[in-house]
Length: 142
Ligand SMILES: CC(C)(COP(=O)(O)OP(=O)(O)OC[C@H]1O[C@@H](n2cnc3c(N)ncnc32)[C@H](O)[C@@H]1OP(=O)(O)O)[C@@H](O)C(=O)NCCC(=O)NCCS
Image (cartoon, rainbow, N blue to C red):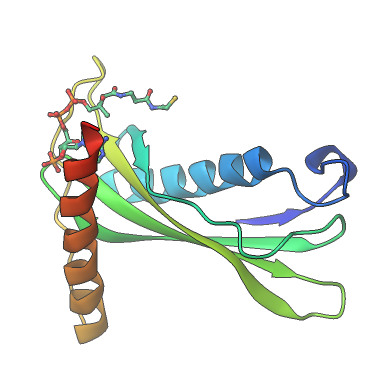
């Protein structure tokens, strides 16, 4: 997903409003989850999000979502957000991990297709996602 940062997306400093960026991240992750599941998916959780760099008015924002893990009905989506300045310099502004759950017409969780792991990089990514999931579920009740 690509977005141009316009005045209505910014705060008093002329940098992108955090909630706006999170909304784009949620949409990109939702599209990613929906394309994998080919069914409606809802946001179940977001891990900690750290805004590493400000994104300014006039920057182009590149948002890339990838399914990194699938469970029975849930999926982890990694979303990376880069800012591109007018000179073409591109830098990572944030990375976020979201969990989406595939639901039926009643909003009840339903199975998702398993993720195919084709490379060692995919397998390594999966292993890291499993650790995050364990931590996430432990923290859920706090
Ligand atoms: C997400 C939701 C569908 C889960 O329903 P539920 O009845 O709690 O479902 P279950 O306990 O059976 O869990 C279903 C899956 O979601 C996972 N899950 C549930 N809550 C989670 C959370 N907070 N973080 C990560 N995973 C979660 C479970 O581990 C399970 O995964 P698995 O099937 O891959 O093993 C339900 O909580 C919901 O509708 N939430 C609101 C969603 C919404 O409105 N989102 C928009 C935000 S405003």
